[in-house]
Length: 181
Image (cartoon, rainbow, N blue to C red; front, side, top):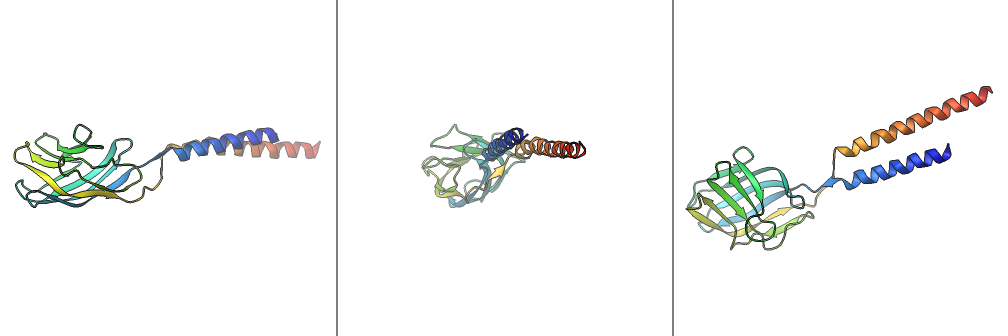
């Protein structure tokens, strides 16, 4: 019985360890000090995992300059990774493809968070790409990521708890049978 209990505990610990490994690095990236060549600015945030190239939400607003003010969000736009200049390039593009905001960086974004400068030679916003305005300054920054266990983590623990409960009950039944014998 002792061997079985140890085996179940070992399996449980292994499953718990696997659950802790299954974490996303979804970070909220804030637009900091982004200005365009025409004096307009951009503000907002993007929740994305730059390691897995996935995103959940974004809300990025630009002010009027050579282009009218606009807000990119999940309702009217999509976020696309790659296809541009620089490491970890991504762009926001309206559903009809008429307006886009290209983000390129001087160094690769990573899942550890921090501040990353935009590559001003390759970051821009355009409306059917004419008119066109470049980013003259700015960065994206995020805090330190918090571990977000995947929903499967709890599911991994349920069978282990069930086995431990079953073993405890069986041990009690065996003890009762030995008491009356």
